[in-house]
Image (tube, rainbow, N blue to C red; front, side):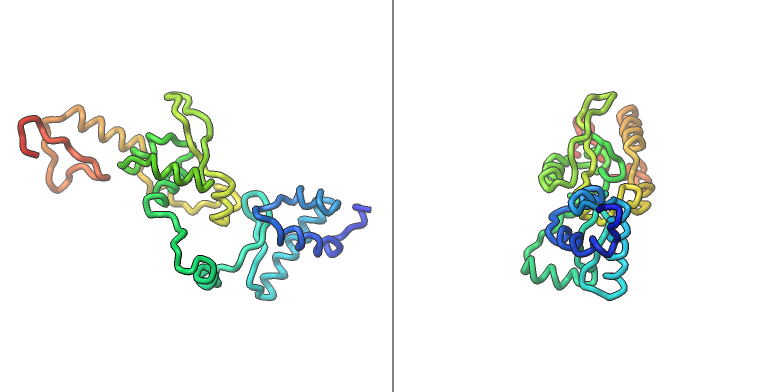
Length: 215
């Protein structure tokens, strides 16, 4: 029975399943649900996605985080936000976005290293990101034994990415933890050297006042 199935014969069933999906569903899961070969299901999903694009529907079918799911189109984002949220702010704070960016481009990474890159304590922000399902524990650092964190499939879903390889090339703009640590070490080794006013330490690094001074 499954061998005679075509993309056209499973299209309706796939639409029904995807309308009920609360998260991306893999082609394998969909194939099992409709009892059709995976290749047939993939063809049907690809044709559906193209059809929605060609006919200018208000929604689209995307392949994200290893699965398929319906999304409203980006051009309707403001309308939907105003209708659903009614003015409430559901966005991440700037601190959370910066922390999430550091983790996304440097994962797996420990909490202390994220703090070093950002120059501030990130404990509270990282708890928020974990609570929202955007990051998760991903083992331990082999040198220090500290817990390391990585982004989740939910992060990929919310960003509309298929994999981390689709992240924009922003990594070169992030300060390297090793460079920051090297700068701090140099400052610690030379406490009596006053920094030049024009070329003093950057990235938020501060010099503690010497004992006996008024700071």
